Length: 165
Image (cartoon, rainbow, N blue to C red; front, top):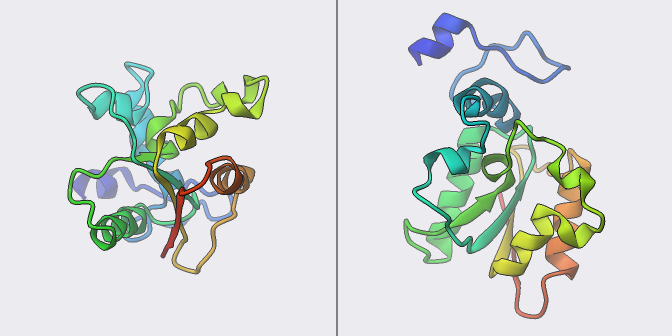
């Protein structure tokens, strides 16, 4: 976009700070740093709180690699919705969009794991979607490991567990 070019956006990955970004290379981590955090700064809220009309009950819990491209994440979820016959109104809980970037440690103070956002969301949803990046990677943070643990053992009988790439 013109804004991206004018501002000369580069990767937020500390291992690759000189890499120029375009629509195919902007990672989820880059989107948080360059788009979501600035867009939500005035209200100090999450992206979901900024754009939603009100509370929305999630149907699917999503865990993804923060180094995956934002475009690939959205494409994978659209394919998942199509494959599952969910339609355009499918409701996914994506932590990157639902968590408040201005309060990154909210889950850190949870006295028990059952009080974390991931655990609470899994209890409300019918399934989990794990989105792999273009190289088939997923476990780039401890949060990814925890997400899979919660979704696989803490969800109960009949809980769907899908992996998309």
